[in-house]
Image (cartoon, rainbow, N blue to C red; front, side):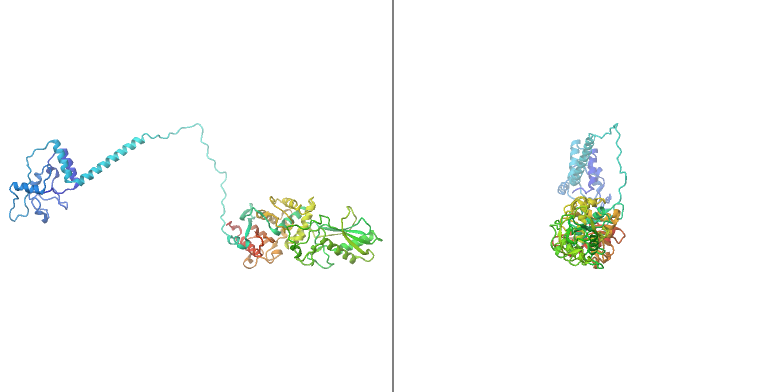
Length: 592
């Protein structure tokens, strides 16, 4: 029969006590426990469940007192031993049979070695699981202890940083002299308008100018010099103010010829000179009249040469080379459809077929046309006898210092540039540019404009680096200026200093005046009366530049150019939508 099971840790501790004190196992173990943890009573059968009473020893006190440190015996061995001693002693009717173990109560202690080894082995055989767990715990404790001591040993060899004092003091960290200004986050986007397919490749600059420091709010390829069409007229106008001044007028004269009976009609660039009779207004209000010039000439010539009739009229268009009258980059259709005349110093009514129309077919020989109109005016002014029956005209030049017989003047430059800008008059722009060149000490040629215009505009402080001027009207696709430069110049124009106010007065107002009078309709109508600008159009670009008085009260200088071969007029509407977006966003215009 096996010994009753005990708590594993309790058994382990008892085994160690056995080894340490060599006390009998029965004395060390003490009373066994039931499976429910209660100690059995000393009386046989008390406190033991009924199903176990038949299997438990009757006299447990005697049983424990006779337990030794000998290895336990099996049930078979116990039965055999009992048989040798007379078998089981049973009392009829008894509940529990007494089992007598063959242990001598008077047995002496075993030899120390045998008792120690035997006791430990016996305990291990009785409780192998408990001993295995105990051994594992001891092993882990040993490993942990070794790791601790190893860590101490290693840590003791680690070098500890030592602070070394130096004589040189550590320099103080420099702090910013000023706290950086906060950056305003702008959230009003015109991304949809910018990406409009009608614009194709678009160049944009929109700059807030109502602050001490201008801020470019929106930029798309803004630093790239590109064609801007008639926006170039703004530069021509400014150059005229800078070089000629607002009060300057263009003269047309009649001087005495070097041959008796000869007079010379001298043109100096006034394309507004009108052949219409007195009382009739041409497309250019207030223009000088050929009739007035002819009347002066007849009267003065008759006084100077009373007995010599006029037989020849020389036409002098040599203020600049009369052959340098058409840029090779211009389409001749501009001439035949009525947008551009040949650039000659002598012409009348902009060489229009109908002097009262802005767009009217132009002729192929403006000088000859002007000569014929002047001869008609002379005959109308002749009281009789001053003109010969036959008078011829020819090209030539007046002698220096020739006697002045008659002179008429155009409207002042301040008026001319306004007329030029509002209706985008190409002819006026070209003749004014040539006059600027002549008065700048150059020859008045088309090529001279490359230096004459930027130099004049630069006097206002405008950035002209990289700027290319091919003509005065912007008709050439070879003109090039960046959107940033245009927008910045528009800001200068709006300030109006040094005579630039005359240029500002020539900007069209959306829905009201000039080339913008019929623009900004439909969904863009809210911007009418608030967008100032100069329009531009050639066959490869639509453009617009000027000033927006935004809805929030801010001022935005802007420049937009949409470039594409064969661009359609739909681009105008797309540009209007974009600039109307500037109006709505104002200073909150975002660069995305």
